Length: 192
Image (cartoon, rainbow, N blue to C red; front, side):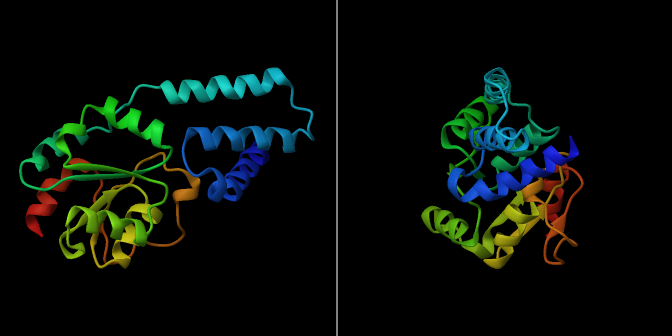
């Protein structure tokens, strides 16, 4: 089992440039892993199980992290809120719509990669100066490092399930802030 999970992570990493992020890309990588790990002996019924599981993931209800709705409500009155998320366009659009939060954001940006160039495009398109921008997220790789590279601010709020390919080795950069919970964000922003 551990070998298959490690192999899946390697296949996902290999496929990122081709398939991107999201459940559909994950499903294709799972099928590829099943073929490789089984020596091409994976059955059609096992492939069907992978497909059924992926449909369950796509249809799974959006579960907001505790404190997100209240925090977004509190910030929406005082700040220009942008939502920047990456992944499959159709799935992310559906998740954003089902979250019930979309009206609180000035704009929603679903991107294929969160890198400095992408953040720069988003900020330029919305007229936000990087010096005035604060990105909040759970991924050091996607939400912290590229934003700091632009000279913007980043707040890392860890989440107990962060995708293996979003993790980085080492400490959080000193320029980044760390909060234990999202509901600590309003007070943090008011104090800085």
